[in-house]
Image: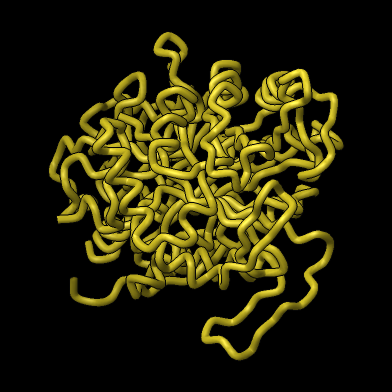
Length: 270
Length: 208
């Protein structure tokens, strides 16, 4: 039986891992490649990297650390994919077919597209036609308007008039293979997923939905699958500070009766 | 194994070559990446990954002039070969993804869209799923019954002769997860993304 997936989400700014809160405040966490070593050993199911660097990299290079700092995303993808024999998704700044092709060639399996698809929805169908739907994930940032309706947020900031369900359905029709749904309201809050949002989107489309934004404890992950009906549950901050957090989360999910792959990368070999 | 086998990782222009190269490097295999016809004859074994659509995969192979030489290497020269994902699907005679496309025709059968509508299952089939081994296959040596592999696809290979199926997976229907016929092997999942069991599978192919 197909298992649900647990996906740590890592945000990169100027080549450094950061923690985000409400898409506004950022705190540096460290080197993106060193973090991957831990995740690989702990047997996470997949990793999503989102590059949220505004504009060009501004050279936060440090020469005094063991692992080299990287100041472009393709080098980071190359480094990560050499260590990480699991599915890798890279997003942020994916604006052209070449951007997709470059990332895949460096070892990414999928990309997330966001702003470029809002600018021109045909970007989704062109990407799907060239590289296959399986590698095009539509990333949607969502904020609730005052009337409670769920609207698409542009570039992590500006709320648009576009309804989330309408956008998700349209993107599916254009060939998006998955939907990565991030609640800006819940980002960094630790209050849990916006379950109604996740469930409504999951029921509106037939492609897998990855829930993100708000996880503060392992029960929130369980809720994301049970109440949110998400195919995959993603979280960022909670995995950054707690040692052995992936193992704990996996054990909790399995103990709760959900179908997840057990922790441990060597699982399944005699 | 008497000598270290030399493996060509065939760059047909449609595969995630880097990921497979990373694993081969990790296990210390003797391999090189190429899209040259002459390398097919130099190599002892061939690996060809594939992503994207069936039709596009065939088109790219033909553009690079690899279609016939690859058939020859598998059918006539009998080189041990491993196709991954769409690389496995194109071993079939015909594929029904966005129209009808003629495949390499190495293993009789066709590639069809997964039927999941009645079960309310999502497509593509994305994620870790456990496979059921149904014969003693050298490719799955030391891999446990029920091991999980990473899948990412919407189409599956239905061989004419079901005895070519070495393991199956269940998603709405039970279908081919891996196939083999003589010297030719194919896997629907991505062993290069499947951690422990995936690495073991590559070791098995390298050492067979």
